[in-house]
Length: 227
Ligand SMILES: Cc1cc2nc3c(=O)[nH]c(=O)nc-3n(C[C@H](O)[C@H](O)[C@H](O)COP(=O)(O)O)c2cc1C
Image 1: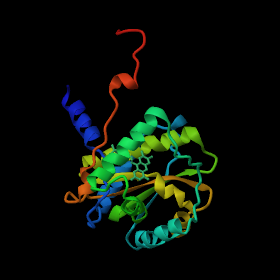
Image 2 (image 1 turned 90 degrees about the vertical axis):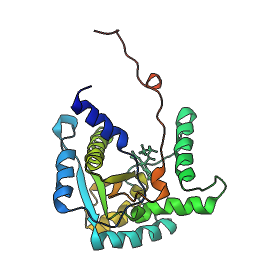
Image 3 (image 1 turned 90 degrees about the horizontal axis):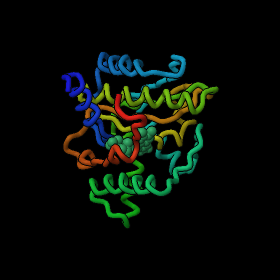
C-alpha cells in the first residue's frame, strides 16, 4: 500500500463519533482549514449546496441553554421528515450501536433515566466548544442531501487528521426553529443535522465507545470479474 493510502486508511479508521470534549476552542486558522478541506467534497453538478453555520462562544452557550428546554417542552421543529424506525439487520445494527454507547457509560438497558440523561447531552452538544449546523437551501431534497453527507464526512475526516473529534447529530435537527432563530438564519435554509466538535476528552469513558462494521460481503458485490 502506498504511504498516502495507508495515511488515508488510518484517518478513516480513526474517525469515530466522540461525545465528550475539552473546553479548549479550536483556533481560527484550523477552523478555516477544515472547511477548506470539506469543500473539496463532490456535489451534483458542482452545486455545492452546503450552507454551514458554526456556533461557538456566547451564541453556543445560548443554544446550550435553549435546546434542552425546547426538547423537554416537546417543541419540535423538523425540516426533514424523521421516522427513526428500522427493521431486520438495520434494527440489529441500531441496537448494536446503542449497546456499545450505553456499555461505554456503564448504563444498563433497564436504566431508562440514565439513558435519557445521556440522550439529553445531544442538546448540550456533549460540552463541545463548537457546533457546525448543516443546512440545505429550500428547493433542495434527497440528491443534495447526499452532497451534504459527503461534505460532512470530508469535514469530519479533516478534523480527525488534525486531532479533533466530532459527533454528527440528527438530534439537533429536531429543533430547527430555535437554532435558526438564535443564529439569525432565514427559514428557507433547512437544517439536516449538526456536528459537535472540538478536542476530545481522552479521560471520558463515553469516548471508548466502538461500533462494529458489517463484512464486505454483506454490502458490496463485484460484477463482471476482475479486469
Ligand atoms: C447523519 C448522522 C446523524 C447522527 N445522529 C446522531 C445523534 O443525533 N446523536 C448521537 O449521539 N449520534 C449520532 N450519530 C452517530 C452514529 O450513532 C454513529 O455514526 C454510528 O453509531 C457509527 O459509529 P461511529 O461514528 O463511532 O463510527 C449520527 C451519525 C450520522 C452519520
